Length: 129
Length: 389
Image 1: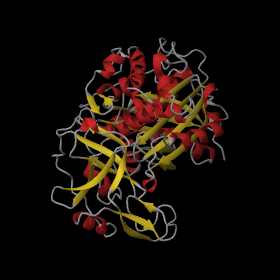
Image 2 (image 1 turned 120 degrees about the vertical axis):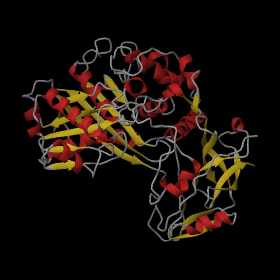
Image 3 (image 1 turned 135 degrees about the vertical axis):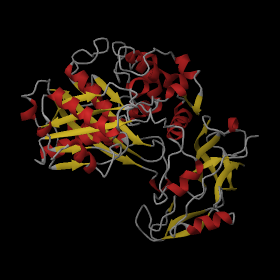
Image 4 (image 1 turned 90 degrees about the vertical axis):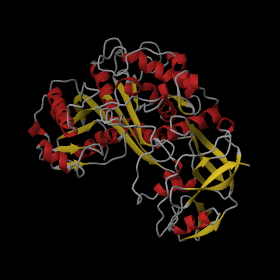
């Protein structure tokens, strides 16, 4: 089993995104949904990137599947980066953790786990279901 | 307004250095500017338009204009990453067509090799105010793994193999052996590429471009001026540009910005992929080339792996000679930005100035394209179609 032991850069939240990171600290993965067109999006914005409508936070089930990935071998601690297509709709960048990197595959079902960052908020990452 | 035959490339210069610890960054910009002017047969005082991107030190174009002692009436420092200079040629042509300048200078220079930058494998520092930073930086995106995810998805969707991608590097190395300035002049095999160390799966070390110091410059001018200069005239037929991004989370790696940019460039130029005698594709990685070939319409979507195999990109061997200077994969990737050198080799081919071993016979039409930034997240795509007048 390989785990991510590299130092995770702490995300710098701002007034637009604070709720996302507070939710992450509480073990919840949020996305934003447009109050006008109804479309969810990622990364979260105050105004919808599809129609500029006002947006609201929406809790997800924290699950999705791997759209693509790459295992970074030329790094002090190898790690797996991925795009995860959430059941909630949007696709987000993340890391795949707590698994054998050689077993990662496109289409694999994953669920969110929250990993501590280096002195900051917890960061949503994913592990195979 | 169209730029079709409204402007010409009259001067080009590629700095011969690949390692320049003895030169300042600004000095490299000046040396390539001087080289391009000499190539064109123009003088510094003829320049009334100046174009540069993020590699140029200082405030937009202003610090370089000061350092170079220019007095332009038109400046543009649009930065869309390594493809910026392809876009600059198009913007220079637009400015010339609109009467905003007559002789435009575009410069590029950088010293990532002597500065020891881990260009493609270390996460880049992004200011916290950049809206995507907090949602990406914790995951350690690098240039290499962002391109690798595109390759991984292509393999999943189309069965593309590492061996097929390797053919792109093999072709570049066949060309680089004839370029005395190329950083890597040894011819490599498919086996060499797939047996080289894995950097970011599925991309191996030899799927990645070189890291070099150096630079280059281009002079764009109007046809009335170009026809009285010493070099064969290269007309700009058309151009296209397109940013592509994460689309609010509707991430789709099946296409790049080149698809839209190419469509616009083909329409404006009135020619089609099959007419091209030569192509320069930005080759930050092998996958970058494969995606451009598909998105420009040189083959059906998904068939890029088959298209590049068996030497099809090698001059004198295959149907589509590409990057006959050895490209970024083997020769030069100054400032980690490969767009400008793509224009240079296309112009050499159209002038008949490429190395005789790789010169394409009767090369009257060429395309140059590039994607700057990250293929997996957000990038600026630019396409330029040129003809020998």
